[in-house]
Length: 139
Image (cartoon, rainbow, N blue to C red; front, side, top):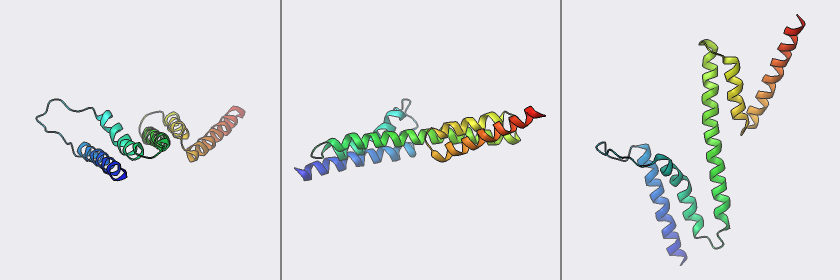
């Protein structure tokens, strides 16, 4: 029974890996008008191997923790991409026209929701802005 479960879990993991490479290299024909749902494919690539591995475990309790861990990792990745993008735009606004002094703290604020280093850096930026505001108020 264990061998059959391992074979099924391996097949599901292999299919998820194939879907991943198909999405990376455009696994559908250019003649095809209708494409698949990329969000569903991403979810399947993340959840598929975990579900396959844990579905055949003896007690099934590991599936919940693995799924939660994957969801947390995916959330952290999305926040990192969005935060670094906003931060990069803010840094570019230092030399380009735009409100860099507003956009950079927003990018740090997004990153601070998941990363301690960003939270520390954001706190230093706030302290420096308050210090500069205090000096400007005295003159």
